[in-house]
Image (cartoon, rainbow, N blue to C red):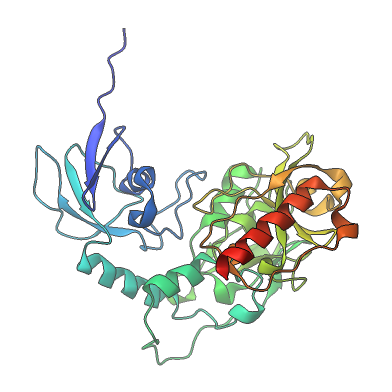
Amino acid sequence: MAEEVQNFKVTIDGITVEVAPGTTILNAARQIGGDIVPPAMCYYSKLEGSGGKCRTCLVKVSKGSEKDPRPMPKLVASCRTTVMDGMEVLNITSPEVIDARKAVVEMLLINHPLDCPVCDQAGECKLQDLSYEHGAEKSRYEFERRTFDRIDIGEKIQLHMNRCILCYRCVFVANQLTNQRQHGIIARGDHAEISTYIQEALDHDFIGNVIDVCPVGALTDKTFRFKNRVWFTKPVDAHRDCPKCSGKVTLWYKGPDVIRVTGRKDEYNEVEDFICDTCRFETKRTDDWTLEEPTKISDQSVIASNHYLAFDPPSVIKDNPVLQEANVEQLARAEKLK
């Protein structure tokens, strides 16, 4: 009979949780939830090997374990550091962590352009959230910012390297979901960039997922570019019988039209099931899908909290109970904000 695995107890910001051996500090914090979960721009639980690039998830280990209670001498990346039994961790309760995170955000924003008003990622961008919560009032950087030309790396994908924070997520997607990776990181230091081999196009059944995993607006959907702002749209969960993937998606409606299709995401903005390019780009009619329910949106999201709510006319939703429910939910949010 196999021995029962003994869970480890770890305390994060005064809250104790039991987790399996091998669990990282970040995932232990996610089991607790709430504000004590460190932000993560490069870690993606569905992608093997991700994490350790952006340093936004730094935490302080004030007690190593019951056997060795000495604190770790430096801040550690919570997405890469596994827990030990009796470990004590400080995140939002540590001034040292807060100062370090502020410095990391300042570094991420050194070359980032101030084009949020025209960026398709606005409203869904984790870098916006991070800069609002942990950023400085102004940059101390006085040198010329690096700039790149926009390039098309496929029929449906455009790369804005100016916005990239080199999180490597898109590279991991290509490595793990496609038969052949045609892009990666070239050069080093402040010259490093995402690029393809001599402008080779990205053309695989699942390559569109690089758009979903990009935490900023560096990789954009050319079929959605400049069509609408995300807070003017209505997300609805839907599915279809797809021979390539799970077929479970989020449809983004503007009136009666589906203007974008994405994978369904969890509370940490990670895709639950990666979807194929056929579902993402080729099936943008309501008749192609079985609608389920309005997508659950966090009350903290700009999609839920905006004051510019556009409701569909009765003629659009009279035969569509899911869109009717989406209208009711949006109206309820508007009343809540008054």
